[in-house]
Image (cartoon, rainbow, N blue to C red; front, side, top):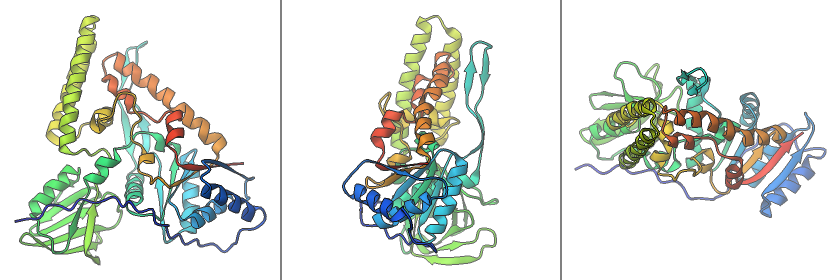
Length: 408
């Protein structure tokens, strides 16, 4: 008799985080006054504050001091990847013992799906994913769910749709030494979490089975993997090892396995999503038929039925993000799930270079809408693809926690 998988429970704790700031300098000049004033505003519940200072005045150090003294999780928003990387490096040096994470777009190259009616040109989506950045994104979402001492440095692309936090956290499961479970059930569960079985090659997002030994390469690790050794149906040991050399690094009592993709969906939600996708397809076919558009009807039927077959067989399909509204069970026009839904309620948001970042946030939705509306009009996508989008400025403004706008 095997025990059910213990599901990971999101900690509801709002306990103060323990940040250790490492710096050879102490606040000087106008910094102590600025730090005290901003902390006072945060403690009084002020939602909007501004930190202004010329280049070289130590605004990043001031932010770090506020994070340390407030002892709350923080998100730092930068206008582009370059500034985000610079801030990430600085924060990493200030907080070497804490979870400083990097969350930016993981595309090295990205050509969005598009249709140009004037020339009857369809451009298929083409992209190259940076594995290192994808790993760091998984590290960010994992740590913000598990820890309080977290600083996430993100670009403005974090307002784009991400998998639902409910699905991502509810599908995570734990494995513990002494636990009774069938190794085949664990393998099936890993497949549901979109880990790929590969007994020859072994890379991030994969697992392998050799007799009574299960190796898992979690999505948030680069040079470490987990080894779960079974004796019959009992977990005998759990350890961390170097996947390159096989050398054992650490003995563990328990591990929590998170999905290999942010777009993972539980089977009941997937079944419900497929039902609503079929209904939307039926409505769209009726619309195209009534408006004498047989080509558009054929296009949308062929593509959607193929995607439905892939979802049924594997739980995934190419361009699955276009069905995110169905997969998350949200209403038409409702905001998509983003990184902001992963943040605890008491997080602090710093908007760096806010004179550049804030206008960017306002313009991202409109360009995305025009492109997807054209795809839906000509039968390349169902209209629900429009809801796989960045947040509108008003939605972001409503969703964001207490904010400090940082500007020159």
